[in-house]
Structure formats: structure tokens, C-alpha cells
Amino acid sequence: MIAAAGLLAVHNKTILILGGTRDARDLAAALNENYRVITSLAGRTKSPKMPAGELRVGGFGGAKALADYLVSEKIDILVDATHPFAATISRNAAEAATLANIPRIMLQRPPWQAGAGDHWEEFPDLQAAAMGLKSNTRCFLTIGRQELGAFKARENIWFLVRMIDAPTTPLSLTNHQVITGLPRASTDDEKKLMQTHKIDTLITKNSGGALSAAKLDAARELGLKIMMIQRPQVPEGDVVETVAAVERWLVNH
Ligand code: NAP
Image (tube, rainbow, N blue to C red; front, top):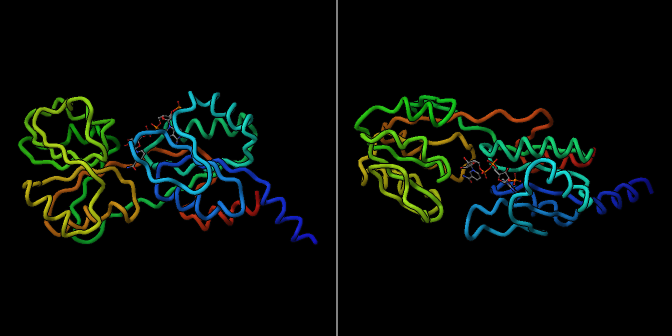
């Protein structure tokens, strides 16, 4: 009897997943059978992969507006499964969950670690990496499109810029070429790309995860320098690394 009542309570919960990552999609798929699941996307990419359950797209308008949404949509639990570098929405999520008085957990995949044969230099942010970049290098930038401005003063560098969708306005970089698409899954493909463009330095955020790790293997095999941007701090509160860990946490909330 007690178990059945507990199960019924679980089925009635509504969970808001702040998404935009593979982990968020995996989580929505795992929870969709037992909960009402709504995934929220910022709307950054033209054709995002669809999560299981319900979907809403676009910013909320800040922490207070997110709190209002949590209340009006009767959200019971907030899961922040956004990208490790999406620091603003994570801060807003923490504040909103407090305002709405609901539990919140963060799902963040573990960061990459340098291993044998890697030539990593770590930087706290993109501005520091831009300052630390040696003149006359050929640099592969895999940081998305929003923060390319950090490199605009570096006129004596050539950049290969990879982004998911083609830019709609000219980039602020002087010498560059844009390639569109997701990171290549195969190390050989990433190696070929780096060799074709005579890349000597890779700049990347420490996103972690397997989906975009082939570029790190390629850079290691080619002996290239990696300028690794460290993650921003996460707000205080529970943080787990896997979908299964979120599921275990949910049982207690
Ligand atoms: P952000 O800077 O933390 O968020 C900026 C604003 O976007 C938020 O204040 C919020 O607007 C809205 N927002 C973000 N995520 C949302 C969500 N899931 N649902 C609804 N609204 C959301 O995040 P970001 O602009 O998305 O990205 C910041 C950094 O993370 C960038 O450096 C980007 O390259 C990186 N990123 C990488 C990936 C990837 O897959 N590689 C994916 C996402 C982000 P309101 O304040 O109006 O609510």
C-alpha cells in the first residue's frame, strides 16, 4: 500500500528541465514515463533536437519571471541541465527555485581532464585566453558564436571558427574562416580538419562529455596546444553528473 501511494505521488509531479544539452534530452527521455516533463530551451539553434515530453522555447525574462513561470505552471521540481558555461540561466534558476520554494538540482557532466600527451594550458575565461594567444598562430575556435568578440583585437591570428548554424552577421574577427556543423564524432575527421587548415592551437571551453571530445584526441595525436577555458562557478546546491543520479535524487524529493 505504502509503495503504491508513493508511486502515485511520483506520477503526479511536474518537472521543468532547463535544457539545451544532450544530458537534458537523455533526462527528459528517462523521466517522461513517470512524470510530466517540460523542457525549456533558450532558442539558440535553428533546428534543435526534440526532447521527450513537452517543450517551451525562449528566455523567461530573468529570475523573477522564471519564478513566476514555476508558480503559474505548478512546477514541483526544477532540474538545471543547461550547458556548464550557461552561467546566467543557472544563477537565475537557483534564485527562482528559492523564490518559488521548490527543490532544484543541477545535472552537469564531469569536466575533461588533461592526460598523458596533452599540451593544455588553462584559462579562467575567453578574455584571458585571447591575451595569452601567441601572435601568428593558426587557431581553431570551438566556443560557439556568442563570445567571439573576445578575440577581435587579435588581428595577427588566423581563426578557424566552428559554429552550429551559419552566422547571420559578419564576425568581428579579422582573419578567419567559418565552418558550420556539430563537432565531428571521429578523431580522424577532426585530425583531417586540423591538418587541412594547418591549425597549431585549439581553444575550447571545458564542456566535458563524449560528444565533442574527438577534437581533444585529435589535438593530442597531432601534438597541438590546447587552450582550455575553465568552467564558471555553479550556484550552491545539489549537483550530480548522471541521469541515473538525478533519478535517485528525485525519489527523495
Ligand atoms: P546563459 O548565458 O546562461 O543564458 C542567457 C539567457 O538565455 C538567460 O538569462 C535566459 O534568458 C536564456 N536561457 C538560457 N538557457 C535557457 C533555457 N534552457 N531556457 C530558457 N531560457 C534560457 O546561457 P546561453 O546564452 O545559452 O549560453 C551561455 C554559454 O554557454 C555560451 O558560452 C554558450 O556557448 C554556452 N553553451 C554551449 C552549448 C553547447 O551545446 N555547446 C549550449 C548552450 C550554451 P532570460 O533571462 O530571459 O530567462
